Image (cartoon, rainbow, N blue to C red):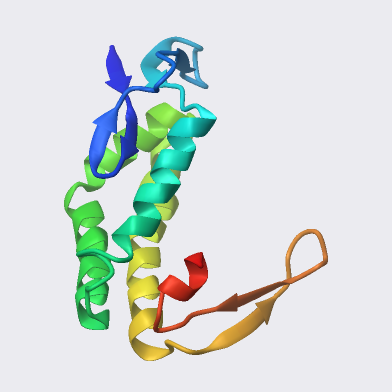
Length: 149
């Protein structure tokens, strides 16, 4: 059975409390993986690592390098298309035709859109409707450290 650990600071680690839970198939309820349960401390450690990354190598990347990375994610999703289809079918129970024609292509397309937004409209903002009727403001800045301070 697959063992899935937390990904913190670039490394897969078990939960600090040593607890795990079963991931079950939505189709037949069989156990398909054992997942590391994250504690509050594990989450805090992940957030601290993410904030620190903004001041390290990741934070020093240029806008063009970040755009290239996002396109790279999209390209890798496309390259491993069948792997993503199989994983999402197992995880969600959705039929193959939905994964192949909607979810996986949309996932790859989203990363390209994110890259294009960063490249072409780095300081734009727009309002959008939300299901709760309150709306949301979406914006992008050139300096990502502003988001986390």
